[in-house]
Image (tube, rainbow, N blue to C red; front, side, top):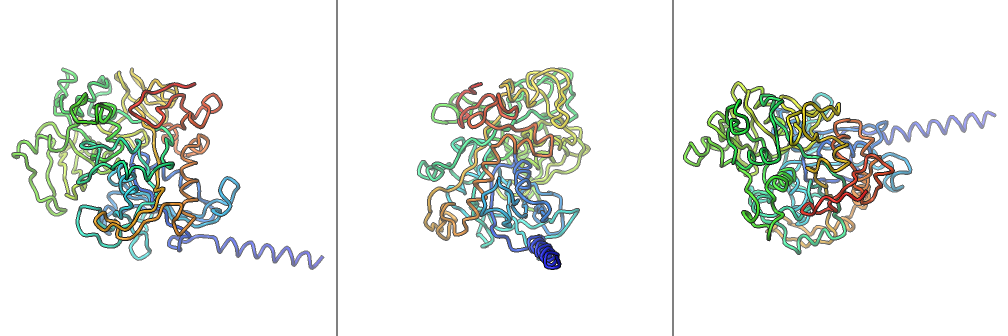
Length: 514
Protein backbone atom coordinates (compact mmCIF):
# COMPACT_ATOMS: atom_id res chain seq x y z
CA UNK A 1 0.00 0.00 0.00
CA UNK A 2 2.79 2.38 0.86
CA UNK A 3 4.56 1.58 -2.40
CA UNK A 4 1.35 2.28 -4.26
CA UNK A 5 1.01 5.70 -2.58
CA UNK A 6 4.65 6.46 -3.30
CA UNK A 7 4.18 5.46 -6.92
CA UNK A 8 1.15 7.75 -7.20
CA UNK A 9 3.03 10.61 -5.52
CA UNK A 10 5.98 10.20 -7.89
CA UNK A 11 3.69 10.05 -10.89
CA UNK A 12 1.92 13.26 -9.83
CA UNK A 13 5.24 14.99 -9.18
CA UNK A 14 6.58 13.98 -12.59
CA UNK A 15 3.37 15.20 -14.24
CA UNK A 16 3.71 18.53 -12.44
CA UNK A 17 7.34 18.86 -13.55
CA UNK A 18 6.36 17.94 -17.10
CA UNK A 19 3.63 20.59 -17.03
CA UNK A 20 6.07 23.19 -15.72
CA UNK A 21 8.58 22.26 -18.42
CA UNK A 22 5.99 22.80 -21.13
CA UNK A 23 4.58 26.03 -19.68
CA UNK A 24 5.67 28.96 -21.83
CA UNK A 25 7.17 32.31 -21.14
CA UNK A 26 6.89 34.97 -23.81
CA UNK A 27 10.39 34.71 -25.21
CA UNK A 28 11.23 31.03 -24.90
CA UNK A 29 13.05 29.57 -27.90
CA UNK A 30 10.39 28.16 -30.27
CA UNK A 31 10.70 24.73 -31.83
CA UNK A 32 9.80 26.44 -35.10
CA UNK A 33 9.19 29.99 -36.30
CA UNK A 34 6.70 30.14 -39.18
CA UNK A 35 6.33 33.31 -41.26
CA UNK A 36 2.92 33.86 -42.92
CA UNK A 37 2.69 36.88 -45.22
CA UNK A 38 -0.12 38.32 -47.29
CA UNK A 39 -3.74 39.41 -47.05
CA UNK A 40 -4.79 41.85 -44.36
CA UNK A 41 -8.54 41.32 -44.92
CA UNK A 42 -8.50 37.93 -43.12
CA UNK A 43 -5.87 39.08 -40.59
CA UNK A 44 -8.27 38.54 -37.70
CA UNK A 45 -9.32 35.14 -39.02
CA UNK A 46 -5.70 34.03 -39.47
CA UNK A 47 -5.02 34.99 -35.85
CA UNK A 48 -8.11 33.18 -34.59
CA UNK A 49 -7.11 30.01 -36.47
CA UNK A 50 -3.60 30.15 -35.03
CA UNK A 51 -4.87 30.64 -31.50
CA UNK A 52 -7.19 27.65 -31.89
CA UNK A 53 -4.17 25.42 -32.50
CA UNK A 54 -2.52 26.33 -29.20
CA UNK A 55 -3.12 25.00 -25.69
CA UNK A 56 -4.29 27.91 -23.52
CA UNK A 57 -3.30 26.03 -20.37
CA UNK A 58 0.34 26.14 -21.47
CA UNK A 59 0.21 29.90 -22.07
CA UNK A 60 -0.34 31.85 -25.30
CA UNK A 61 1.36 35.15 -26.07
CA UNK A 62 0.35 37.75 -28.65
CA UNK A 63 2.59 40.36 -30.28
CA UNK A 64 1.64 43.42 -32.37
CA UNK A 65 3.82 45.83 -34.28
CA UNK A 66 4.20 49.18 -32.53
CA UNK A 67 3.67 51.32 -35.59
CA UNK A 68 7.32 51.46 -36.57
CA UNK A 69 8.70 53.06 -33.41
CA UNK A 70 9.52 51.80 -29.94
CA UNK A 71 7.65 54.67 -28.30
CA UNK A 72 4.15 54.51 -29.76
CA UNK A 73 1.49 51.87 -30.15
CA UNK A 74 -0.77 53.76 -32.53
CA UNK A 75 -0.87 51.11 -35.30
CA UNK A 76 -1.85 48.35 -32.87
CA UNK A 77 -0.94 45.41 -35.07
CA UNK A 78 -2.26 46.72 -38.35
CA UNK A 79 0.86 45.59 -40.19
CA UNK A 80 2.15 42.62 -38.15
CA UNK A 81 0.90 40.25 -35.48
CA UNK A 82 2.47 37.15 -33.96
CA UNK A 83 1.25 34.30 -31.76
CA UNK A 84 3.39 32.02 -29.60
CA UNK A 85 2.01 28.85 -28.09
CA UNK A 86 2.21 25.09 -27.60
CA UNK A 87 0.29 22.97 -30.13
CA UNK A 88 -2.55 21.10 -28.45
CA UNK A 89 -1.92 17.52 -27.42
CA UNK A 90 -4.94 15.92 -29.03
CA UNK A 91 -5.65 13.49 -31.84
CA UNK A 92 -6.73 16.19 -34.30
CA UNK A 93 -3.07 17.16 -34.79
CA UNK A 94 -0.18 15.09 -36.20
CA UNK A 95 1.58 13.30 -33.34
CA UNK A 96 4.96 14.87 -34.12
CA UNK A 97 3.44 18.37 -33.97
CA UNK A 98 1.75 18.02 -30.59
CA UNK A 99 3.29 19.89 -27.65
CA UNK A 100 5.67 21.76 -29.97
CA UNK A 101 6.34 25.45 -29.32
CA UNK A 102 5.46 27.43 -32.45
CA UNK A 103 5.91 31.15 -33.11
CA UNK A 104 3.58 32.21 -35.93
CA UNK A 105 4.41 35.65 -37.38
CA UNK A 106 1.72 37.11 -39.66
CA UNK A 107 2.52 40.05 -41.93
CA UNK A 108 -0.47 41.94 -43.36
CA UNK A 109 1.43 45.02 -44.57
CA UNK A 110 0.93 45.60 -48.28
CA UNK A 111 -1.71 42.92 -48.59
CA UNK A 112 -2.20 39.74 -50.56
CA UNK A 113 0.48 40.10 -53.21
CA UNK A 114 3.02 39.84 -50.37
CA UNK A 115 1.68 36.33 -49.83
CA UNK A 116 2.24 35.52 -53.49
CA UNK A 117 5.22 37.18 -55.21
CA UNK A 118 7.88 37.09 -52.46
CA UNK A 119 6.79 33.57 -51.51
CA UNK A 120 7.24 32.35 -55.10
CA UNK A 121 10.50 34.25 -55.49
CA UNK A 122 11.88 33.30 -52.08
CA UNK A 123 12.59 36.95 -51.32
CA UNK A 124 13.61 38.29 -47.94
CA UNK A 125 11.11 40.94 -46.82
CA UNK A 126 10.59 43.20 -43.79
CA UNK A 127 9.14 41.62 -40.67
CA UNK A 128 8.47 42.18 -36.96
CA UNK A 129 11.19 41.47 -34.41
CA UNK A 130 9.92 39.31 -31.56
CA UNK A 131 12.59 39.55 -28.87
CA UNK A 132 12.68 40.40 -25.17
CA UNK A 133 15.13 43.25 -25.74
CA UNK A 134 12.92 45.02 -28.26
CA UNK A 135 9.30 44.31 -27.27
CA UNK A 136 7.26 46.17 -24.64
CA UNK A 137 4.30 44.69 -22.76
CA UNK A 138 1.27 46.97 -23.09
CA UNK A 139 -2.32 46.05 -22.14
CA UNK A 140 -1.59 42.32 -22.25
CA UNK A 141 0.04 42.38 -25.69
CA UNK A 142 3.72 42.73 -26.50
CA UNK A 143 4.40 45.61 -28.91
CA UNK A 144 7.44 44.98 -31.11
CA UNK A 145 9.33 46.94 -33.77
CA UNK A 146 9.10 46.53 -37.51
CA UNK A 147 12.54 45.64 -38.85
CA UNK A 148 14.18 45.21 -42.22
CA UNK A 149 13.57 46.80 -45.61
CA UNK A 150 11.31 45.50 -48.34
CA UNK A 151 12.78 44.74 -51.78
CA UNK A 152 13.20 47.84 -53.88
CA UNK A 153 13.03 50.32 -50.98
CA UNK A 154 16.71 50.50 -50.12
CA UNK A 155 19.61 48.46 -48.80
CA UNK A 156 18.46 45.53 -46.70
CA UNK A 157 19.65 45.21 -43.10
CA UNK A 158 19.93 41.45 -42.67
CA UNK A 159 16.91 41.38 -40.35
CA UNK A 160 14.51 40.46 -43.15
CA UNK A 161 12.83 37.03 -43.33
CA UNK A 162 11.64 34.83 -46.19
CA UNK A 163 7.94 33.98 -45.83
CA UNK A 164 7.23 30.26 -45.45
CA UNK A 165 3.73 30.51 -46.88
CA UNK A 166 1.27 33.13 -48.03
CA UNK A 167 -2.42 33.94 -47.86
CA UNK A 168 -4.30 35.85 -50.53
CA UNK A 169 -7.87 37.11 -50.81
CA UNK A 170 -7.83 36.01 -54.44
CA UNK A 171 -5.98 33.40 -56.45
CA UNK A 172 -2.41 34.34 -57.44
CA UNK A 173 -3.15 34.75 -61.15
CA UNK A 174 -5.25 37.88 -60.44
CA UNK A 175 -2.09 39.81 -59.57
CA UNK A 176 -1.58 41.35 -63.00
CA UNK A 177 -0.20 44.75 -63.91
CA UNK A 178 -0.86 47.59 -63.88
CA UNK A 179 -3.47 47.65 -61.08
CA UNK A 180 -2.83 44.53 -58.99
CA UNK A 181 0.97 44.43 -58.62
CA UNK A 182 2.89 45.86 -55.67
CA UNK A 183 4.81 49.14 -56.02
CA UNK A 184 7.92 48.88 -58.18
CA UNK A 185 7.48 45.21 -59.15
CA UNK A 186 6.16 43.04 -61.94
CA UNK A 187 3.72 40.16 -62.02
CA UNK A 188 5.00 36.60 -61.69
CA UNK A 189 6.26 34.91 -64.84
CA UNK A 190 4.76 31.52 -65.75
CA UNK A 191 7.96 29.87 -64.49
CA UNK A 192 7.71 31.69 -61.16
CA UNK A 193 4.04 30.80 -60.81
CA UNK A 194 4.85 27.14 -61.38
CA UNK A 195 6.58 26.93 -58.02
CA UNK A 196 3.12 26.82 -56.40
CA UNK A 197 2.15 23.71 -58.40
CA UNK A 198 0.16 21.39 -56.20
CA UNK A 199 0.09 23.72 -53.20
CA UNK A 200 -2.30 26.58 -53.93
CA UNK A 201 -6.03 26.05 -53.49
CA UNK A 202 -9.30 27.75 -52.74
CA UNK A 203 -9.39 27.54 -48.95
CA UNK A 204 -12.57 29.34 -47.91
CA UNK A 205 -14.81 32.17 -49.07
CA UNK A 206 -14.74 35.66 -47.51
CA UNK A 207 -17.32 38.38 -48.10
CA UNK A 208 -16.25 41.84 -49.23
CA UNK A 209 -18.45 44.78 -48.40
CA UNK A 210 -19.84 48.23 -49.14
CA UNK A 211 -18.91 50.52 -46.24
CA UNK A 212 -19.46 54.21 -45.59
CA UNK A 213 -19.00 56.70 -42.79
CA UNK A 214 -21.95 57.64 -40.60
CA UNK A 215 -21.99 61.07 -42.24
CA UNK A 216 -23.50 59.30 -45.26
CA UNK A 217 -27.21 58.95 -44.36
CA UNK A 218 -28.45 55.41 -43.82
CA UNK A 219 -31.14 55.94 -46.46
CA UNK A 220 -28.52 56.48 -49.19
CA UNK A 221 -29.06 54.00 -52.01
CA UNK A 222 -25.96 52.03 -53.02
CA UNK A 223 -25.84 49.96 -56.16
CA UNK A 224 -22.92 48.17 -57.74
CA UNK A 225 -22.71 50.86 -60.43
CA UNK A 226 -22.87 53.79 -57.98
CA UNK A 227 -20.19 52.38 -55.70
CA UNK A 228 -17.99 51.39 -58.63
CA UNK A 229 -18.36 54.83 -60.22
CA UNK A 230 -17.12 56.47 -57.02
CA UNK A 231 -14.16 54.09 -56.85
CA UNK A 232 -13.30 54.92 -60.46
CA UNK A 233 -13.66 58.69 -60.12
CA UNK A 234 -16.69 58.93 -62.41
CA UNK A 235 -18.75 60.13 -59.42
CA UNK A 236 -16.80 62.69 -57.40
CA UNK A 237 -19.50 64.55 -55.47
CA UNK A 238 -22.34 63.17 -53.34
CA UNK A 239 -24.84 65.35 -55.20
CA UNK A 240 -24.35 62.93 -58.12
CA UNK A 241 -25.59 60.12 -55.85
CA UNK A 242 -28.43 61.97 -54.16
CA UNK A 243 -29.59 65.50 -54.99
CA UNK A 244 -30.28 66.09 -51.29
CA UNK A 245 -26.59 65.56 -50.45
CA UNK A 246 -23.43 67.49 -51.23
CA UNK A 247 -19.69 67.40 -50.66
CA UNK A 248 -16.74 65.61 -52.22
CA UNK A 249 -16.47 61.83 -52.21
CA UNK A 250 -13.60 60.42 -50.13
CA UNK A 251 -12.26 56.93 -50.87
CA UNK A 252 -10.44 54.92 -48.18
CA UNK A 253 -9.04 52.17 -50.40
CA UNK A 254 -6.06 49.80 -50.32
CA UNK A 255 -2.73 49.89 -52.15
CA UNK A 256 -2.29 48.08 -55.43
CA UNK A 257 -1.15 44.55 -54.72
CA UNK A 258 -3.71 44.22 -51.97
CA UNK A 259 -6.00 41.24 -52.46
CA UNK A 260 -8.90 43.24 -51.05
CA UNK A 261 -8.23 45.94 -53.64
CA UNK A 262 -7.86 43.27 -56.33
CA UNK A 263 -11.28 41.90 -55.39
CA UNK A 264 -12.79 45.40 -55.74
CA UNK A 265 -10.99 45.87 -59.07
CA UNK A 266 -12.48 42.53 -60.17
CA UNK A 267 -16.03 43.21 -58.97
CA UNK A 268 -16.36 46.88 -59.97
CA UNK A 269 -13.79 47.31 -62.75
CA UNK A 270 -13.76 43.86 -64.38
CA UNK A 271 -9.97 43.72 -64.05
CA UNK A 272 -8.10 41.54 -64.94
CA UNK A 273 -10.91 39.34 -66.29
CA UNK A 274 -10.75 40.78 -69.81
CA UNK A 275 -8.89 40.20 -73.05
CA UNK A 276 -5.23 39.57 -72.16
CA UNK A 277 -5.80 41.45 -68.87
CA UNK A 278 -5.09 44.73 -70.69
CA UNK A 279 -6.22 47.87 -68.88
CA UNK A 280 -8.97 49.60 -70.79
CA UNK A 281 -10.06 46.46 -72.69
CA UNK A 282 -13.55 45.93 -71.35
CA UNK A 283 -12.76 47.38 -67.95
CA UNK A 284 -12.41 50.69 -66.15
CA UNK A 285 -9.50 51.99 -64.11
CA UNK A 286 -9.66 52.36 -60.31
CA UNK A 287 -8.87 55.88 -59.11
CA UNK A 288 -5.47 56.41 -57.45
CA UNK A 289 -4.15 58.90 -54.88
CA UNK A 290 -2.79 61.02 -57.71
CA UNK A 291 -6.39 61.54 -58.84
CA UNK A 292 -7.06 63.41 -55.58
CA UNK A 293 -7.98 67.10 -55.80
CA UNK A 294 -5.06 68.07 -53.53
CA UNK A 295 -2.58 66.53 -55.95
CA UNK A 296 -4.16 68.19 -58.97
CA UNK A 297 -4.54 71.61 -57.30
CA UNK A 298 -0.86 71.59 -56.35
CA UNK A 299 0.20 71.12 -59.94
CA UNK A 300 0.38 67.33 -59.84
CA UNK A 301 2.51 67.28 -56.71
CA UNK A 302 2.23 66.74 -52.98
CA UNK A 303 3.30 69.32 -50.43
CA UNK A 304 5.78 68.03 -47.87
CA UNK A 305 8.84 65.80 -48.13
CA UNK A 306 7.25 62.38 -47.57
CA UNK A 307 9.09 61.86 -44.29
CA UNK A 308 7.84 61.30 -40.76
CA UNK A 309 8.85 64.87 -39.86
CA UNK A 310 7.37 66.31 -43.05
CA UNK A 311 4.76 63.95 -44.52
CA UNK A 312 2.98 64.50 -47.80
CA UNK A 313 -0.27 66.36 -47.08
CA UNK A 314 -3.64 65.28 -48.48
CA UNK A 315 -6.57 67.61 -47.71
CA UNK A 316 -10.03 66.13 -48.41
CA UNK A 317 -11.53 69.61 -48.17
CA UNK A 318 -9.97 70.30 -51.59
CA UNK A 319 -12.38 67.92 -53.31
CA UNK A 320 -12.50 64.32 -54.49
CA UNK A 321 -9.91 62.35 -52.51
CA UNK A 322 -8.46 58.86 -52.81
CA UNK A 323 -6.33 57.41 -50.00
CA UNK A 324 -4.32 54.22 -50.63
CA UNK A 325 -3.83 52.44 -47.30
CA UNK A 326 -1.25 49.68 -46.67
CA UNK A 327 -3.58 47.50 -44.55
CA UNK A 328 -7.23 46.98 -43.69
CA UNK A 329 -6.50 48.37 -40.23
CA UNK A 330 -5.41 51.59 -41.88
CA UNK A 331 -8.63 51.67 -43.92
CA UNK A 332 -10.64 51.35 -40.71
CA UNK A 333 -8.66 54.22 -39.18
CA UNK A 334 -9.12 56.24 -42.36
CA UNK A 335 -12.92 55.84 -42.17
CA UNK A 336 -12.95 56.60 -38.46
CA UNK A 337 -10.88 59.78 -38.84
CA UNK A 338 -13.01 60.86 -41.79
CA UNK A 339 -16.02 60.71 -39.49
CA UNK A 340 -14.67 62.01 -36.15
CA UNK A 341 -11.82 64.21 -37.39
CA UNK A 342 -8.09 64.40 -36.83
CA UNK A 343 -5.10 63.36 -38.90
CA UNK A 344 -4.79 59.96 -40.54
CA UNK A 345 -1.13 59.02 -41.12
CA UNK A 346 0.36 56.02 -42.88
CA UNK A 347 3.40 54.90 -44.83
CA UNK A 348 2.55 54.25 -48.47
CA UNK A 349 3.77 51.35 -50.57
CA UNK A 350 6.36 53.76 -51.98
CA UNK A 351 7.93 54.07 -48.51
CA UNK A 352 6.77 57.68 -48.19
CA UNK A 353 4.84 59.08 -45.23
CA UNK A 354 1.40 60.61 -45.83
CA UNK A 355 -0.92 62.69 -43.63
CA UNK A 356 -4.62 63.13 -44.42
CA UNK A 357 -5.99 66.20 -42.63
CA UNK A 358 -9.62 65.38 -41.85
CA UNK A 359 -10.04 68.44 -39.63
CA UNK A 360 -13.28 68.35 -37.63
CA UNK A 361 -14.51 65.25 -39.45
CA UNK A 362 -17.96 64.71 -40.90
CA UNK A 363 -16.56 63.63 -44.28
CA UNK A 364 -18.65 61.36 -46.46
CA UNK A 365 -16.27 58.51 -47.20
CA UNK A 366 -16.60 54.99 -48.55
CA UNK A 367 -14.20 52.14 -47.84
CA UNK A 368 -12.59 49.05 -49.32
CA UNK A 369 -12.97 46.35 -46.65
CA UNK A 370 -13.95 42.73 -46.13
CA UNK A 371 -16.52 41.57 -43.61
CA UNK A 372 -13.55 40.39 -41.54
CA UNK A 373 -13.82 43.93 -40.12
CA UNK A 374 -17.26 43.20 -38.64
CA UNK A 375 -17.26 44.33 -35.04
CA UNK A 376 -14.63 46.99 -35.70
CA UNK A 377 -17.08 49.58 -37.03
CA UNK A 378 -16.20 52.93 -35.46
CA UNK A 379 -17.68 55.94 -37.19
CA UNK A 380 -18.78 53.86 -40.18
CA UNK A 381 -21.11 50.99 -41.13
CA UNK A 382 -21.38 48.21 -43.68
CA UNK A 383 -24.17 48.97 -46.17
CA UNK A 384 -26.45 46.74 -48.25
CA UNK A 385 -26.05 46.19 -51.98
CA UNK A 386 -28.70 47.42 -54.41
CA UNK A 387 -30.57 49.15 -51.62
CA UNK A 388 -30.54 51.69 -48.81
CA UNK A 389 -29.72 49.92 -45.61
CA UNK A 390 -27.04 48.93 -43.10
CA UNK A 391 -25.73 45.62 -41.82
CA UNK A 392 -24.29 44.62 -38.45
CA UNK A 393 -22.26 41.43 -38.84
CA UNK A 394 -21.99 40.83 -35.10
CA UNK A 395 -25.72 40.84 -34.36
CA UNK A 396 -26.56 39.70 -37.91
CA UNK A 397 -29.18 42.45 -38.26
CA UNK A 398 -30.11 44.44 -41.35
CA UNK A 399 -31.97 47.74 -41.68
CA UNK A 400 -33.66 49.18 -44.74
CA UNK A 401 -33.54 47.51 -48.13
CA UNK A 402 -31.01 45.77 -50.33
CA UNK A 403 -29.00 42.54 -50.20
CA UNK A 404 -27.06 42.35 -46.95
CA UNK A 405 -23.62 40.68 -46.72
CA UNK A 406 -25.10 38.07 -44.41
CA UNK A 407 -24.05 34.46 -44.09
CA UNK A 408 -27.42 33.23 -45.36
CA UNK A 409 -27.14 35.38 -48.49
CA UNK A 410 -23.55 34.23 -49.06
CA UNK A 411 -24.53 30.60 -48.57
CA UNK A 412 -27.33 30.75 -51.12
CA UNK A 413 -25.40 32.80 -53.70
CA UNK A 414 -27.56 35.93 -53.39
CA UNK A 415 -24.57 37.97 -52.21
CA UNK A 416 -21.82 37.32 -54.75
CA UNK A 417 -19.27 39.98 -53.79
CA UNK A 418 -17.02 37.39 -52.15
CA UNK A 419 -13.53 36.10 -52.81
CA UNK A 420 -12.10 32.61 -52.49
CA UNK A 421 -8.95 32.74 -50.37
CA UNK A 422 -5.86 30.90 -51.52
CA UNK A 423 -2.88 29.76 -49.47
CA UNK A 424 0.37 28.74 -51.09
CA UNK A 425 3.99 27.81 -50.47
CA UNK A 426 7.08 26.92 -52.49
CA UNK A 427 7.05 23.44 -53.96
CA UNK A 428 10.59 23.58 -55.38
CA UNK A 429 14.05 24.62 -54.23
CA UNK A 430 15.40 27.99 -55.36
CA UNK A 431 19.09 28.85 -55.91
CA UNK A 432 20.69 31.96 -54.46
CA UNK A 433 19.91 35.10 -56.49
CA UNK A 434 21.20 38.27 -54.77
CA UNK A 435 19.65 40.55 -57.39
CA UNK A 436 16.24 39.12 -56.44
CA UNK A 437 16.74 39.68 -52.68
CA UNK A 438 17.52 36.01 -52.22
CA UNK A 439 21.12 36.04 -50.93
CA UNK A 440 21.10 32.31 -50.14
CA UNK A 441 19.43 29.27 -51.62
CA UNK A 442 15.84 28.79 -50.40
CA UNK A 443 14.37 25.29 -50.02
CA UNK A 444 10.86 24.18 -50.76
CA UNK A 445 8.75 23.88 -47.65
CA UNK A 446 9.04 20.08 -47.84
CA UNK A 447 12.83 20.37 -47.85
CA UNK A 448 13.08 22.93 -45.06
CA UNK A 449 15.68 21.87 -42.44
CA UNK A 450 12.93 22.13 -39.81
CA UNK A 451 10.19 19.61 -40.75
CA UNK A 452 7.86 21.14 -38.13
CA UNK A 453 7.27 24.07 -40.48
CA UNK A 454 5.50 22.05 -43.16
CA UNK A 455 3.60 20.05 -40.56
CA UNK A 456 2.28 23.26 -39.01
CA UNK A 457 1.54 24.97 -42.34
CA UNK A 458 -0.34 22.00 -43.79
CA UNK A 459 -2.41 21.69 -40.61
CA UNK A 460 -3.11 25.45 -40.61
CA UNK A 461 -4.30 25.41 -44.24
CA UNK A 462 -6.46 22.33 -43.64
CA UNK A 463 -8.12 23.93 -40.65
CA UNK A 464 -8.69 27.22 -42.52
CA UNK A 465 -11.04 25.38 -44.87
CA UNK A 466 -12.81 23.22 -42.29
CA UNK A 467 -16.40 24.44 -41.62
CA UNK A 468 -16.39 23.15 -38.03
CA UNK A 469 -13.07 24.85 -37.26
CA UNK A 470 -14.33 28.12 -38.78
CA UNK A 471 -17.53 27.82 -36.75
CA UNK A 472 -15.50 27.38 -33.56
CA UNK A 473 -14.05 30.89 -33.92
CA UNK A 474 -15.32 32.77 -30.87
CA UNK A 475 -15.89 36.12 -32.62
CA UNK A 476 -19.41 36.18 -34.06
CA UNK A 477 -18.42 38.84 -36.60
CA UNK A 478 -15.60 36.68 -37.96
CA UNK A 479 -17.84 33.61 -38.12
CA UNK A 480 -20.41 35.56 -40.12
CA UNK A 481 -17.77 36.81 -42.57
CA UNK A 482 -16.52 33.52 -43.95
CA UNK A 483 -17.63 30.01 -44.94
CA UNK A 484 -16.11 26.77 -46.15
CA UNK A 485 -16.32 25.87 -49.84
CA UNK A 486 -18.46 23.05 -51.27
CA UNK A 487 -15.50 21.49 -53.09
CA UNK A 488 -14.62 19.36 -50.05
CA UNK A 489 -17.71 19.70 -47.85
CA UNK A 490 -21.43 19.13 -48.39
CA UNK A 491 -23.66 22.17 -47.67
CA UNK A 492 -26.62 19.87 -47.09
CA UNK A 493 -24.76 18.31 -44.14
CA UNK A 494 -23.19 21.50 -42.75
CA UNK A 495 -24.76 24.96 -42.81
CA UNK A 496 -21.32 26.58 -42.60
CA UNK A 497 -20.58 25.57 -46.20
CA UNK A 498 -21.46 27.74 -49.21
CA UNK A 499 -23.63 26.22 -51.93
CA UNK A 500 -21.65 27.86 -54.74
CA UNK A 501 -18.04 28.25 -55.81
CA UNK A 502 -15.91 29.69 -58.60
CA UNK A 503 -13.54 26.73 -58.26
CA UNK A 504 -10.60 28.99 -57.46
CA UNK A 505 -11.10 31.11 -60.59
CA UNK A 506 -12.70 34.45 -59.78
CA UNK A 507 -12.92 35.25 -63.49
CA UNK A 508 -15.27 32.30 -63.85
CA UNK A 509 -18.98 32.25 -62.99
CA UNK A 510 -20.33 31.48 -59.55
CA UNK A 511 -21.64 27.94 -59.86
CA UNK A 512 -24.35 26.81 -57.46
CA UNK A 513 -23.68 23.09 -57.18
CA UNK A 514 -26.14 22.14 -54.42
